[in-house]
Length: 440
Ligand SMILES: Cc1ncc(COP(=O)(O)O)c(C=O)c1O
Image 1 (cartoon, helix red, strand yellow):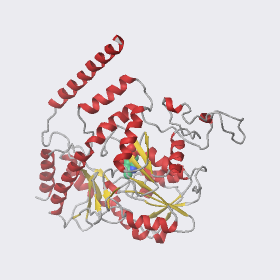
Image 2 (tube, rainbow, N blue to C red):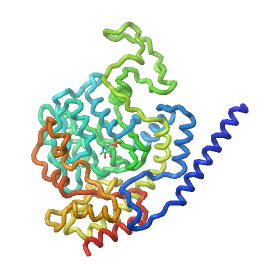
Image 3 (cartoon, helix red, strand yellow):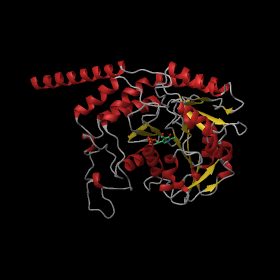
Image 4 (cartoon, rainbow, N blue to C red):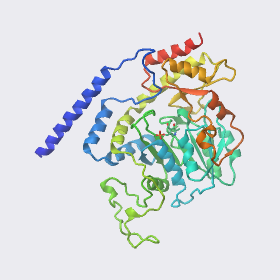
């Protein structure tokens, strides 16, 4: 008993020092317009995240365990979805989603050569798992001002080989989910929602990430909530959940959770199965029914995620406010900028504000972003632009349905600015002043 008390006291002392360290660092922070960089995104946290991570480190569990379970429970409850798996990134979540839909263990798997409808205006790892699984991406254009897959163009891209629609809710702006789900249902297609940039965005009263067969999330530092690195994959289907778990955890057949005591045969049937080609009763933990990976995060990351999730409502509020102020600023210059548009049923929790420079403007994207960067205001490209123009994608097997007019527009004329909660009122004032003075 005395030892337990000692450990508690030591732990409290360490965690008390962590809190002090956080406070000290905060006191030394300041913003000087024109001298301090305005980042487009970043971690927003307080002592609670630092304490949660250090506390978990002191547990010294080191792999995935109870903190992961706690995060998954909270996250699936928040989203209103049955199953959630934590992963080490949004990219891994996308890889798991597509690979799980190709698993022979599910009733209706996709197979190499099958077609997947998607967009070429993409973050690479929304597209990559399609290629990595030997599927053929069929590219349809995006809409000019929502930057999302143009749902009106999906149906004409469908052939007898089409099996899925996979897309991201671009920069937090919900895609036209009612139309997309209707097409998917009528043509029996899987839907994967890359929700990495759209946590807490709503479409028709339902959170993004609750419509498709799978939804994926990123908790990289730039995202709505962060674990540093990390991600999640969610589904309402028990069959797909088990396939995803297998792909995340080496391709194992057993669906007991790994990295914790309950993984040690919680099902009570470790030695009860017979698989073709394997000895009778071969340990189920070492039966591999899929060709998988190891894409698990650490408990420490999940401990941080749990703290971040509590802050999501205030984070979203700040994102929306920052977006509105920047939107109003760009609106004054609508003759040269295309403003972003959300659909009537959409309530975006914006990841960033995308802006396109009109073809008729007398300056280029390069001119404008260079100007902002010299003012120490960070800008970003809308990911790959048209990914087919990227060097790594020259030799991929694909088809374009229609044309990619607006996808190309993004490549040449679109950039985005941050709206994250770390952009305080004084930073926002400085951003707006700088944008306005470009025109003086
Ligand atoms: C739409 C989209 N999908 C996937 C990812 C990949 O997430 P991660 O960086 O966690 O791998 C990102 C990254 O920002 C993204 O924006």
